[in-house]
Amino acid sequence: MTAAHRGLSVLPAAGWADGIADALAARIGSHPDFVVCLPTGSTPRPVYERLPSALSRAGAAMGRATVVLLDEYLGLPAGHPVRCDDQLRRQVIEPLPEPPATFLAFDVDGPDPVAACAAYDAAIERAGGLDLVVLGLGTNGHVGMNEPGTAPDAPTRVIELAPSTMAAARTYGADPPPERGVTLGLAGILAAREIWLLVSGDRKAPILREVLEGPVTTDVPASLLRGHPGLRIIADDAALPG
Ligand code: GLP
Image (tube, rainbow, N blue to C red; front, side, top):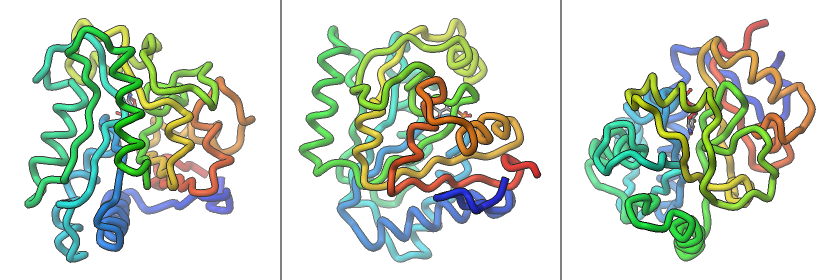
C-alpha cells in the first residue's frame, strides 16, 4: 500500500499522535466555533493526551467549540468508566484549561433511547452541523457503532453490537459487556464537512487494507467513507505494512 491512495496520510508511529493533535489544534485555532465529533477507544487516547499542549502551542482554545460524542453503550450506569461520555469527559474535557462551550452526549439514562437519537440529530443541527468527525476503525470495519451491514443513509439509532465490539467492550472493563448501543449514523458521519479516520497499530493492518483497496461495501462500513470529499485516513506506519 502507498500514500497514493486518495486522502491517505501515513505518519511514523512515533509522531502519529502528535501530528493529529497539532492538526486538530490548528483547525480549532482557525475556527473557534468548531463543532467536532470525537470517538472513544484506544486509538484516539494518545491524541487526546497531547491535545492540551498542542492547543497551547497553536495559541488556540476550545472555549467556543462544541464537542459531540460519537457513540455510547446502552445498559451501563452513568459514571461507569467504560461509558463513552465518561471516557471523553476524563480524556478530553477535564484536561483542557478551558472546557468547550458545549459537550453533547446521548441521553441513555432516560426511558427512551430511540427518542434520544432523534433529539441528538436535532441538537447537532442546532449547533450548525458537524465540521469534523474523528473516527476510530473497528477490526470488523465498523465506524462508531455502525456495524457491518450498515447502509450509507443509516440514521442515528439504537443498534445491536457485533460480537467483536462486545469483546472489545469487555477488554475495556465492561464485564458482562453491553449488547446494545446508540451511534451517530453513517448518514450523520457523511454529512460532516470533514472526516478523519484514525488508524494505528499492526492489529488494524488487515482491515485498513480492505478499507483502502477492497470494494466499497456495506460489509465494511468504513469503505463507504471513500467517496467523501473531505475524508482523511491518518494511519501510522505500523498499520500499513509493505
Ligand atoms: C469501538 C467504538 C468505536 C472505536 C472502535 C475502535 O467499538 N465503538 O468508536 O473507534 O471500536 O476501537 P479501538 O480504537 O480501541 O481499536
